[in-house]
Image: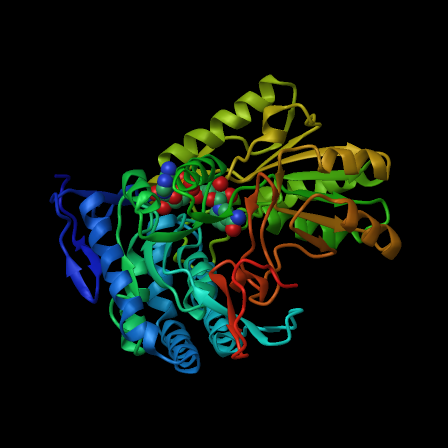
Amino acid sequence: MPNATALSFQNYIAGQNVAPAAGRSFVSTNPTTGKPYGTFAESGLADVDCAVRAAVEAGNGPWGKLSPTRRGRLMMAWGDKIAVNAEGIARMESEQNGKLVAEMRAQATVVKEWLYYFGGLADKIEGRVIPVERQSVLNYTLREPLGVVAVIVPWNSPTFLTIMSVAPALAAGNTIVIKPSEITSASAFELVRLAEEAGIPPGVLNVVTGGREAGEALVGHEQVAKISFTGSEGAGRAIAAQAGGRLASCTLELGGKSPNIVFGDATVENAVVGILSGIFAAAGQTCIAGSRAYVHSSIYEEVADRLAQRARAIKLGDPLLAETQMGPVATQAQLAKDEAMVQRALFEGAELLTGGNRVSVPGLEGGYFFQPTILHNVKSENYIMQEEVFGPVLSLTRFNDDDEVLALANGTRFGLAAGLWTRDIRRAHQMAKRLQAGTVWINTYRALAFNSPFGGYKNSGLGRVNGIESLDQFLQTKSVWCEMSEEIQDPFVIKV
Ligand code: NAD
């Protein structure tokens, strides 16, 4: 049993706090101070089984019996409650992942839009009448929920990413077991408490905490129909393999190595701001971090200078303070990874433009701070150009023509997002079409909306969140055939 901390959480199942069956727990750390944040249940098979059963029961019971319109209204009411409580949720998350409280607040406020949108779609899920050849038959489709959905989330945007999966899953009529990241487990409890306050029945949303073991128990549970996973490529592979073993379906939102491409005709100031916010917002800890930048030779020196000057001026500090521009990275392991990847890049021939080291912030000496870092003249074959850092490290390189930069931009196994900076409208749309990425931003970066599909090409994922099509991933279609004629049909003759 680890040292107890002031904040202590059990699992939350069917509207009750439930102690972990084996009595195990773990302690999470505040990365700004290096001190413990809270104690959480280390869940195993028995805990997961208990949560899944509660979700099955809620699906067969009150949630399954509710009309889609009522279901949607409850989701909207939940959104309002989350927005009202956004400040508390934001502080909780910032104290666990070190991201700016302002960003966490914005996320906890905006998720209501997801619950309004998908809540509004709940009573627009319609089957179809199919005009089959046999005229005496009525054939129609029913769109039905899958059952229990496991929502497994990472630490970098806990509420935002939880709601991105939960909103379409609930709208489709499923019930949920959430397994938050072991780094940021606290806010999920607050979300579920608020859901019940809004009138969503207990058992529709359940929370089990823990690490990989708890996640695997959930993915392997025979009554979990679907896994909606957001996290790393490696865990995504393991989850897809495990789920595939029992033919459960998965939506996977995975990592990226997203490029920003700055053409010679770009508005340089806008491109510089876009690149900086794309990589240094959240200390590079976003799936859509623009961690590679390709800049046309004609403006390379100017762009590199401006980026370096601005990066050096970024104010590191306590993410709870309004004046802080970049907080710590979330874990000691991430800090070590940032450092190791920069060292390896330098060894492989990249040059350091700025940053590159851990840094001690006065008053927060135990915190996990890393300098905003820019490497330049980085080659496509360098490890850092192919692998996600998930830290504040930008790799910069030059290019001369469109085909060359397209090959470079598409030259990784990831395909989450890409940014283009140009005033040439033809070039912009031609490149957008040829880029292998689930999202392409032209003269902007990091824009997302509840009604615009988001997801990865290649190894950045399977399926989409956001937008109407994401509902399909939480539904199954039944085809119903009804013979309307009294005339006896010969069952051994296929009639077309
Ligand atoms: P991670 O993959 O280590 O963990 C994510 C979650 O999966 C955690 O809850 C973890 O406990 C659980 N988990 C890990 N292995 C598992 C397994 N085998 N079975 C079941 N559950 C398992 O990721 P992380 O470090 O928390 O998050 C960072 C990663 O998430 C980055 O790669 C980032 O790009 C990615 N991410 C993707 C998106 C997106 O929308 N595409 C959004 C945010 C983050």
